Length: 159
Image (cartoon, rainbow, N blue to C red; front, side):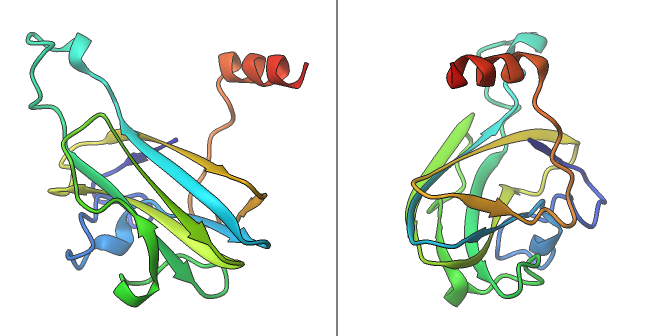
């Protein structure tokens, strides 16, 4: 979970990779120690029920993400097309987008972005799936604890 926060250097609204401010988007850095299949989804808040026209789509940003190989387990300082190993092919004005890829051992950052850059604080949810363990660095961004209902779900899954 996270939020695109206009003006933030670490969780900002840097826009798509073609935008010079792209590194200001939230970044989720992780290490892979064994080659693995990987799938991620990016969701934006469903605020239809808080609007006068709940079927309208004007509240949706074009969303997408890229997965970039990084050195030393650090945030990406800039977009490097040659280091992209996966992500969405386009930015879609949808509630959720997804992409799958194969990751070799190394450090990566998943960078969610909006197009155009979000002009207001916009909550996001990223879900990642893999065959092997992912070790998160998270040096610059805070990942909140599970919500109470998710902790309960985790207890049920363990049973």
